[in-house]
Image (cartoon, rainbow, N blue to C red; front, side, top):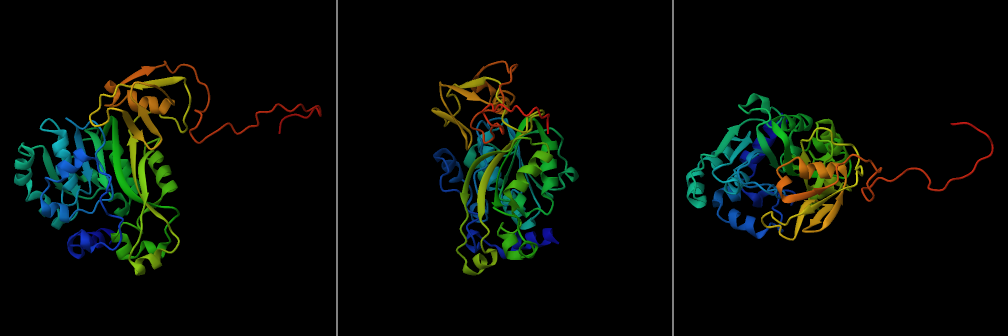
Length: 350
């Protein structure tokens, strides 16, 4: 039922981005210049049928194998194909025939635009919560992306679980989506327009983070976010006080990440060697790591940099053998008082 509703909305109701009734599915205006240049070469029809809500191009993509969940008309697939180059590969999965038709018929156009034959690009019809039904190998992909699509799935846990299965160790799920500041009431979740507009299928942000952890992504990292405004008076009245946000997360597939930021006396030095980030490396919203400066990190952050494709661009300090407690400034503090209070009542514990 939900699948049919979404396919009708994106395949028949929407004929272009101008048909959208909210700004939930809009490109982030802060797109870096090097990405704008690539997107500027994408075919007009592909761009017109684009309904994403953020950026899905993390650092260091050359030669990577990437899977795009809910690829639609292929804007991100073709953009990523230019970034991974001929040695990499991009697979797009979508369930909507009309969108896939647009994506597939412009392969030759993008081969000429980007200077390689697009043999590194595939489009598959399928459901993102049933990726096990497709010819996709477990542990095959370096990166999985998705752009404002997971909220449309009726089984978000299955999507995250399948993404974890398909990623190689040290790989990451890097995706943009819509989140709510509270749980969506059942009557709103059944509204076809709000669902199609990526609002009423949105997860409450804390439910998402717990679901991600249960799916094997132990330490979700928020990269960027922005509030969503609803200019359509009728749709705004329906949602009332609920707040919606477009947000980009990166979830690393790393075994043994801890549930909190623990301090092991470790630090890193960013070498400034990643393209387009010579002065600072942005891991997430709270980790902007300046080049050539010792930067203390928690154990989880150390592993996200050391045990992934990012490793060669950092120097690492500390062996992680001594634990110093919770890492200061990570949102969790010692729950006990610092003062020692003498108590001569002789009472025991509890």
